[in-house]
Length: 173
Image (cartoon, rainbow, N blue to C red):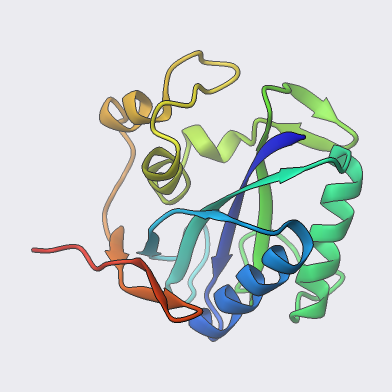
């Protein structure tokens, strides 16, 4: 079984589609490890703010098959087949890491570069798996977060419930 971290995001009917994404992942993989949920401005385009989180799963699927199934979930929840980067979306699911694999594996960049580029990816990953080590940099996600120089403007943890349980509490401040 491979340990995989997935990034989830939505800026259209955010709560509805994050819930739908979690439901779909739970149906496919069983128990999920779920980070806190963060509100973050759209980056790279003018759009509504996103909700972002990281989910940990265990799977026997190959990287390519996992990517195909995740894309199918996105399509089932409104992603246009011709969607381009930096646009609004109902549900976006990205493979961030797949065990300690590196490089382009079955068409998927591993680990995903956004881990080291965007606070809305690294922060929830550091929350969920603080001691896990980035497969290229060799540093824990907690240390990478503590030492990052990323723009954190607008990044705020929000309250989010799923299936009657609080999975995220709002930042106090």
